[in-house]
Image (cartoon, rainbow over all chains, first blue to last red; front, side, top):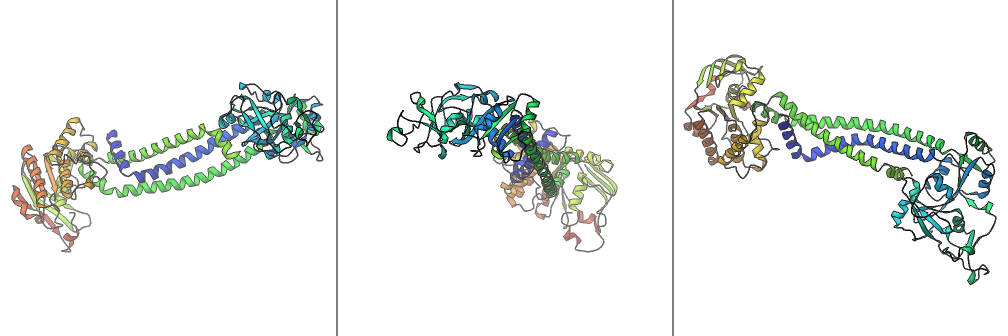
Length: 377
Length: 232
């Protein structure tokens, strides 16, 4: 009997495709939206917390702590709030921590170029999948996503597209890809890593040309590519402690060292700040959770209204079917069968909607990290 | 087959009532029920089918005393014993012709839908000239075709009695004759009783008996009431 009721309900649903589609869409949406919101927020929380938890402290120019953290952890966009190398030396000479400089002012084809030291790869446990880590000026190792998107292989050449990174003669510097990192599903997959000194060459603080030639003479034209043959001719002008970096990742040896370091940046006259990414992210996530609460309240109201409308449509549909129900009763259909028949119709619509919403939620979950990056970064 | 004694029926506050002291229709008889609009022809058909119950009196249909049965028992009785051809066909637009014919087997657990039933449904459709139309929706059929589907639905359960409410209304003479022939053939082959409600005097000669239901009808007030209550 149940099978026959489902069969008749299915026939009815198939015949009234548009009404069914509207009902299924409405129920799917009110089921999917809160689930998707939950999935996205969970992914965002996990995404932000895992990166922040593995980065104890960050030093940078005084200003927005959130911008500093996003620039240092996510290489969100070229970050122009620079500090000097003397700040790195200021930290290092205390022997309280490991300090890793970052330079994220430049990009190539919309991917950030991160100038740093090999210690960064150790900190993030980055493994080279193909090729090797950078050793010389002009060499770079790219994240897995960059390699995939730009179709790069070991040996490929990559122009630095940021205008400021042109050489003294206004020709773009070309980087040589010497390695590709294994995918980590972190922002490191989206970045191009070079030695810190390579970024200073992009800054125009150093260059290479024919030895002995005067700057400005034809022989003194700067090389646009650093090769094994010309690398020895590269040199820097100026004091290294005045060279720019955008931030410093600080890994204190212990809690005491962390407290001591943080205490040194309390002076309001200090032009630099030290921030704890975990605390910054906690503060951001508090705001995200607050927005989620508001959205859940709005979705709840919308869901209630939608459910009332869906109920009204179903009640009206049953009223329209009074003649049909009367005919069934005349032929000999029981009240129970009529209830099962109408219930089957509603159940099929609900099951369809829930299955559809579940599939959408699974897809959202599968693409959660990408969605978070797309929506929030 | 139908035995009515001292039956009284009315619709609550309505001034219409049916009063039948005695009515007998024997097994295998074919009977035409006539009478003016609102005289209670359809009501009497519903009483005999057990769709409604009389206020008082005795009503036996297919050797079953209906007044003593509960609603669910009457529905089971109806689906097993009675083939109903309803006014205006009352087919289901969302089902195919075949599904409309098989409907009684899908709405009551006292009937089992088996492969032999399906075969019989197709055979009935063939006999009615519907073999090419069994997968179509009723809305894509002519009036005559729709009525033939309704007849197939009434006959699919091999009923002991066929009750047809104006089965030839709105049909051209050719289709009307085809429908009546089908009902006649079935009842003769199976020894079933046939009751047909009709306004059409030209077909009275096709039946064993003609009963004027107006003689059982009492209306205490307006003379126009009958015209306003065609569904009776």
